[in-house]
Image (cartoon, rainbow over all chains, first blue to last red; front, side):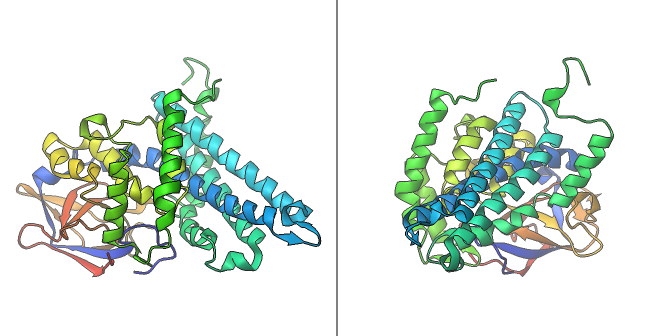
Length: 195
Length: 207
């Protein structure tokens, strides 16, 4: 199955389980605990996606920045034109916002917190912020941004799926919204002894 | 509130940054890439480079050959690796192997770890993650998962025929190893199951 992204060895496929038998010794963990195990896997895995794609967004930004500094238009570098400089500034803000969400959530995980709420929040923020960075980088590169002369359109195609897999933004917003209404706050804001 | 990185993390950040710039970015235009990602040969070459640089699978525990990175450590290393489209493949920290390694470390038995986890950490085995099903099964939300299994003697047997979309991963020798992302999770040696099994790639992945 061809997909928009081409960064994973082997890519994507469709498989069918039919009359499939798994020896008891190959069952992972206890039967009936799958959803709990999925949480063990998914909260940190959401965040590692944010980390890898942050690197990709930073790369796209650096390529666009390099172009904005060297390409001259109307007697000055592209980056000195306000329209482009504002996009570079917005990229910087989005990159740092994503990084702070990642570092803070990673730190909480290192303190032993489960971070289902916080990693969900970071996933939405990072996938959307990092996407905006790559989209702006294409825009700054102009015509070159839609060719494969640079790595940026490749990153653009690869990253789009990040707003969908490991839970689309909408599923995370819905889940966050439910928890917020139920009184959940960022774990850092909870007073000691406050459940 | 302290945002400074430890000396160890700073050194690792510089090491990965240099490795990506010197060894991996030059391969980004390698022709051994298609819509199905890097070829097996390119992937193995990338992994070999990370192995030589002692940067392979850094998030795995020291017991299994990794660096036992903390989550903050991962944040530093993974961002640097992500600077190249091929970086996460080289360091063996790409999805879904990275998360599957984490889960196997947390949940698998000693025997399962030797069989699956150790070769994954060594970069010699890849895994997949099956997530979505045809209607009315799961799409975006795993709470819709419909694939189930029943106990049948000392085996579990699937109860419903389902097609699932996964990120296919193939082992060097052609074995598949699937960590089924269901309510019940199984290690499924794809394509080499006990006789009578049918687990087929309806729409195969290249690689």
